[in-house]
Length: 134
Image 1 (cartoon, rainbow, N blue to C red):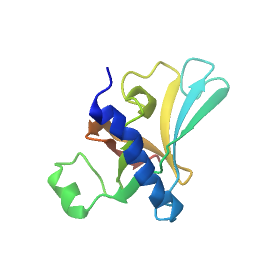
Image 2 (image 1 turned 90 degrees about the vertical axis):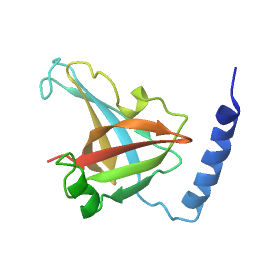
Image 3 (image 1 turned 60 degrees about the vertical axis):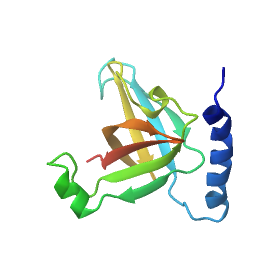
Image 4 (image 1 turned 45 degrees about the horizontal axis):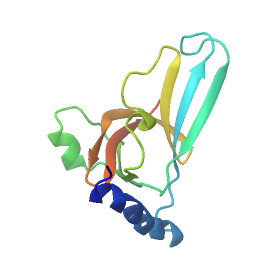
């Protein structure tokens, strides 16, 4: 049975979409699932499946103070992605066990990132931290 929270998720997403309409969130966030046919990363041919996050989530760099307080968990340049719609599941966001030969990339303005912190759900949103892939 749906809860009041479940009923409100679409309203929250509609409100967040207003920021898109005003052009206030301009960074596109795409979750790319890349599967290698050889069963190992870099082996065989690759098949990419993209999931464009909508409404557009908020992306911000971590502050130096926050990085220093993390005890080495975070690095300069890491980004926090928040306001991700609660309609997604943790698996859709790349959390959990990834099969062999599969990698999950977070593309922020076409730059590949990987998860540093597993997506966590809070109220009407998912949050995570990603690091640019080198």
